Length: 186
Length: 81
Figure 1 (tube, one colour):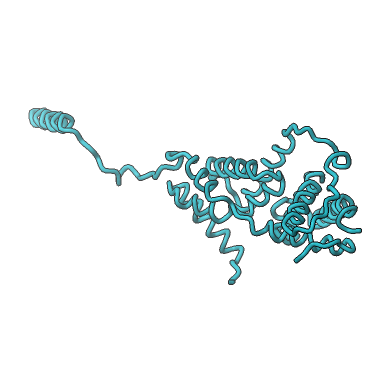
Figure 2 (cartoon, chains in turn brown, green):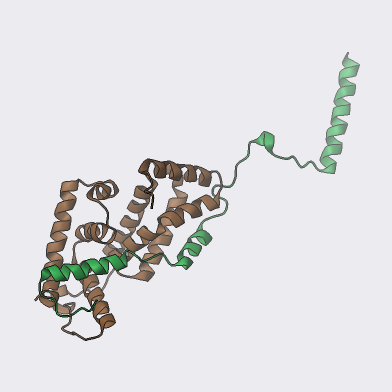
């Protein structure tokens, strides 16, 4: 597959934005289709809830539509910040009966022979472990290991130095290892 | 691949990476696209045309009034000259 030149992508996005501002809903739909998947995955991984990810994506694109004339530079980075902030707001506001990971969310000792059950269990344990991480570590880990972003891309999206991001990912891996190794790495 | 008892953290990370790989294939549900497009307002960026390209719809009454006023103005100017 031919890689798209980042500069071409920026210019394509700017052309689409211009069309939206001129009244084209189709151009906005093109932007939605172009960027919704990575944004959806990010919201899903951050919140752990498909319903919440749906809502965050929808409200983020609506907000983007209303403020489209304010985009300066990369649309995808601007859009990512909207989604990221909404995820963080949701995480801040949610009032879960959150018991500490050590007490209640410890991975169970179930070890069944069925592969699907095993994978579901790993997924559940991984989600809980991710959820137990501080937001900044979780966000960095998801971008690096789920989205497969380079540190340069992460730095552009988050506005944080590459050194700091490497440290966050390293700390996230250490924390996940600590949370999961009791069950998965004997 | 069967997930038997992992032997060390390397295997644990291989499993986590496999899980992350699967997460990476997740797509936005189609109904979410539709919900987004249904939720954006129709008239926020309505197509703006310059006034000189817009069609003018002049009603019959307005037309008659304009003609009468033009005639009156013409007569008045004629008398002055």
